[in-house]
Length: 206
Image (cartoon, rainbow, N blue to C red; front, side):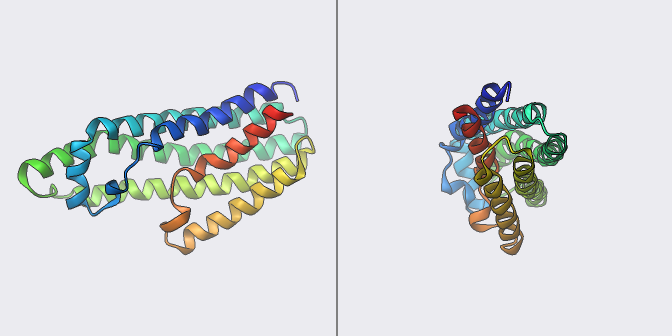
């Protein structure tokens, strides 16, 4: 497939860029707000570093998916890949909105918590809203992975195991995410970039 190296490189870069930020994550950030916000205030530069890289990753990975729709030669596979990209992008918009909240409102709330000794009124509700946007992103990423796996199977241009991996993994993780009420092992954002990164590696090794 012409252009496979470029598309593969972009998909792998999306995963790599995400990991640059995610590697700095601390479990203390996941504590209750009264405990986590002071830590975030203390780590405000680290907090910004993490989320700026995550925003960048959400721009790069969808670009790679868009490129994949162009290089697949089978018309049905191209259509399926485009559908997968559209679902992924829709979820990605929600995640970027949530990241913008983390980059702006959360540092303000952290500063206020340290200054007055309590979480600002109304912040918890807005934080739940941002969390809901994130859940939409994760579910969309899993559904997109399953659809992309079908596209790979239909195309015949990539290994069959890669297609079945996308279908099985996407369905299993989407089901697990819903079953665990959007928490637990299916929730980390790393998973949203994993299958696309694997597809990228396979494209590079062709």
